[in-house]
Length: 346
Length: 271
Image 1: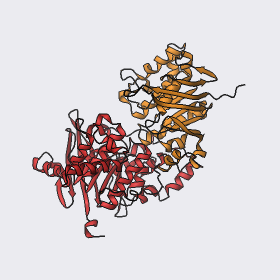
Image 2: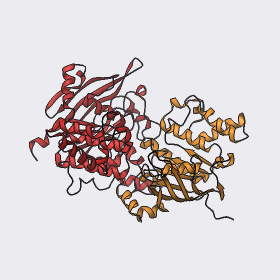
Image 3: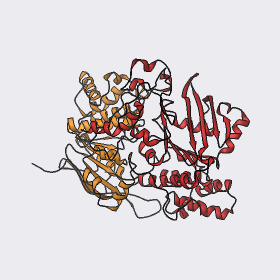
Image 4: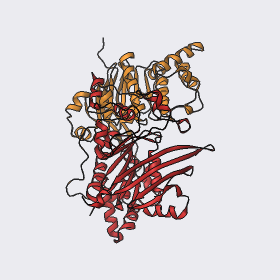
């Protein structure tokens, strides 16, 4: 492993972001930090409203107009950016220059990300030409190759189609092809396979694995599907209501021995084909909306391990190991999740 | 004594006209499917496989070209009577789109009760509370409108509405697909309790094999409009027969499964 591989490709430090709602501001992300090496895939998991998509948008400077970054810096490939100064034009330009061959993003909703009046092949060709110098004819052949790679069977026939002529699943795959066309160093994925069938999902995950292993790309993968994260990612950050609950550079450690009650609850509520006859755990209550957030651990009102001190202060990282972060006062004792699930099955 | 299942579909065919061709498009081809009393039967397939079309045909929302749909040993036509409709009710995928935002939950439930039963006034109130209890929602929510409710709560209301006239079969079309995992688990448990406690039969349409495995007694796999395999759930997962089912099962992401592999031999992003 070279020195270059050990240095983080992307590091986000202390990102706090507020959303304006009806004249008031509410923190949607609080003190978020994580890092990503080259060739590493990090899963960013959490339920809707946890702030995972906002995190990706903050990195690319694509925040909605009512979002304000209160603090936070980002280091990409050794270059530092002040995320709180995105209203500053030159700072914004610097981030914009990263898009494409530096960082690219795959959105959940393909119909908004593709240009409706340009054939899909041409949109991929544009992405190719932005990075590589080649003839247009060559780029078009490469675009067809990419479309085949993401599982579009009759790519030659589809290359001149307009987005409206394709189904949602095909548009999603075209967008993935366009995003990987520039061979970016970092790919931000926002639930890229949620709308796709499992067989296609498997093919797309292989493309991502290839990008990571063969081309050394970093992946920041947002999803609520823990099984997909388990298959693809090396490290994981669990978000709830805009706060990091648990984070580790070793995904297996978190999935086998969750220390935060929320991580444990998420795993217990996930249906898995390998665990039969188990009643799924259903977390009582629902996630707080933006204006319902309060002091202390945001998960406390729904937590089985809750005690009186949970709601008094911001919970610091109380993990004893450097590669892990656990923001919880009453961590889950060290028993394997398998043991818990076995108890529930019997 | 009849040994007929509660729902029997035999050789159901549904076609659509195609814009660019005189040939009709066969969305469902000779599909046969049974749902026994007190059973949850999963119908699994990819998008475009015809699973929703078949579900809509069962409920009577889709005209059938040929084949028989029989409910309780009584053949259903393309036009359903009120009694026919009362036996089979449906829950849709989108809990945001399927409830009227201007109606309170009580009004939403009362509309159906009034149309199909003799209950009025206090009787309706009592029935509404019973239903809320069945779907594990507090009765105080009856006065709220959908806007103030979470996705999971709305889906419970949609289930309560479907149950309000005591159907014997519930058709759930991707009923948990739009929900977060922790909320989804609650709905899956609720459906399983309704089968165990009230003997409800459910046709559960989903693309999510992990949920099918958790919830269903039997499962039918549909591919390009044809049912390629139909067996008890445990059997099918342990020993899939058709090639398509095998491909489908091997693609399921697993919490403790093998890591995703890169591209196959000779495939690369480079040309």
